[in-house]
Image 1 (tube, rainbow, N blue to C red):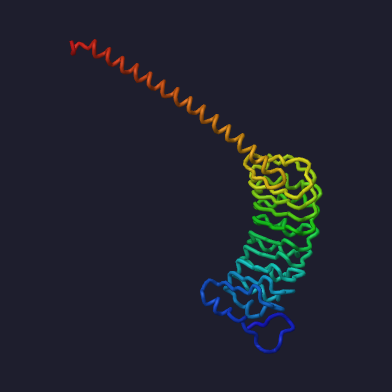
Image 2: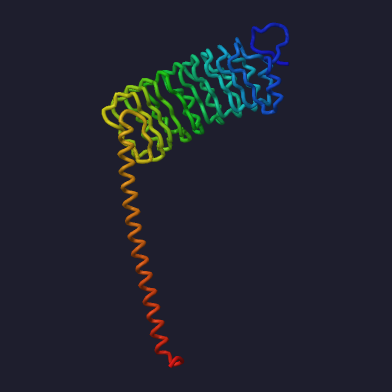
Length: 292
């Protein structure tokens, strides 16, 4: 059996207690959350058919190179640990779709992170990111990106190349101006900019894909201008949403009245034509030689 990272003792390592029982259930899931682990046991990395691995809040400071042996892994939860970097070996997991790295001590991501082309969901909130990781710009299939509670002040101009992105959480960062690259991301469904230092928002009505925009706890001067299909969350949003709903309700009622009027006119026209047809029929009967 392959051993764990360097520095382990000479005796053979075992799976953590209870792990074998979990795997016996047949769903290829291993839950180690909350256990006190100085390092990930080597035998875990030898579980080549494992699909879900949860090791949140264990105190891990590093991951062994052998983690790349988890070739079937789809979900990996590493949040609430003490990781200071993401090892290159983790970037070689060919089937990973969800990765949770929140509440660690990360300052960035390695360039090799872009190899995770199957990744759809990345949570890396509550770390020490001062700059947007460039590797993410090479991951157009990423759909959900959670980067709240970091140190970001700006976003790269090439951010719109992440064409698959649907949800972007940027709350609790250090933006003083609305990030201009977001104006070219019409595919976004969810945008969260809570708890920043933005004092003004540009017109966002052209972002046709947007469904939820959260801007709470910003020193804004005026409410954001968005399409009627967007739900707003923030100071003054409730009044705006109520006024919008009242306006839309009035429009709906007016449309119903107009449609009802047109339907009535259509009915009258149909009745008139039926009457005309009936009168013609009666006239024909009266004039029919066969009836006289």
